[in-house]
Image 1 (cartoon, one colour):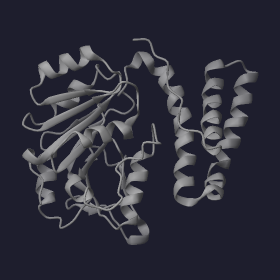
Image 2 (cartoon, one colour; image 1 turned 45 degrees about the horizontal axis):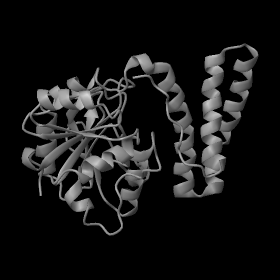
Image 3 (cartoon, one colour; image 1 turned 180 degrees about the vertical axis):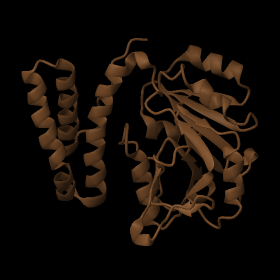
Image 4 (cartoon, helix red, strand yellow; image 1 turned 30 degrees about the vertical axis):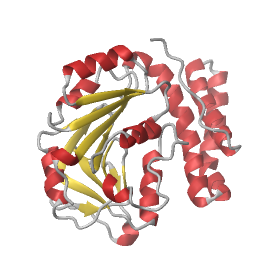
Length: 294
């Protein structure tokens, strides 16, 4: 089955994204259903966005549950066969959807299809060189994984798989997409990139800039938590420990260095890295959240 606008939903997980999300929505065809899962639990935002856009439905989460869990809510809330997962700071080029639809008609089987960034120097995918995967500037090509800020899921096919869950909700932030793609690889599901379908990713602008410092602490904590959790899940505790030793020693050294020179914010960043890593290593859940004023 090929993709059409009638059997496609777009899922956007937002958190304090009022300043940017409309640029994302405006770049999407108006006949496509859009589901916004708002982790800010902002009733005013929901009212505004649903009144402004006829094709948008906003679901409020009672708390900030993260990207993966938010995407899962969107997936459960649509009856469409395909879902394009987007970050709120992604903007589609005018024919991005058309290019994916056209490409889907030429691909026999896929679990995921993704567009590409407008700048080829910063690929939003990883190639598996052991399988001789190569970039193709014209035709869709297979990849090892794609970044989570823009990936189209074949819901109809994936829902038929036995014991396949979508996003692992233990990840709050980072690597939930790598884990998702890794599990697709293990069951030989194809992941394709469509080089003619282009997007812009504004990068790091999904959350209101006034929360920049608080969000940076969250990112550092969860990057380290997720990195150990991902490697432990797929390669075992010993391999995960070996992979993060460099990060561990680096964080310890920099924590003490910035303590000595009284750079409190930098010290706090590396404290967050250490905390995230240690909590992941001892099996604690990804509990850290930013404390933000409304």
